[in-house]
Image (cartoon, rainbow, N blue to C red; front, side, top):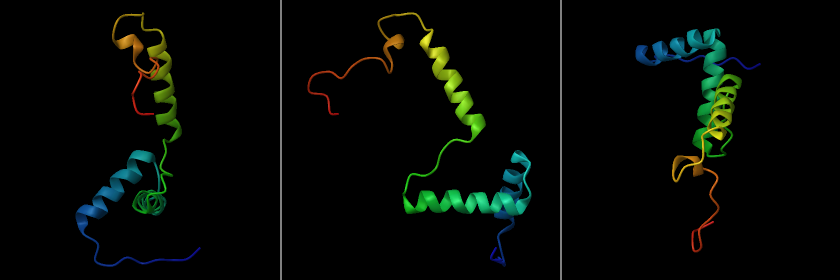
Length: 89
């Protein structure tokens, strides 16, 4: 793998990278690689950013819980109502 050396990095940025690494249990190098990949995906606009497994599982659990909301005239229809006539698709 290619080695890249960064010089004169702002300490606040270095601290942010360390916090990401600690939060995920990663080495700083892995966190930096992950952040670079995600940042490049966002910058290039290819939409490749996604959820990690924990986030995906939490979202899926939340969606499943919403399915059990009893029918009512409002909240229970969120995400279930069909398009209204004239509504953009």
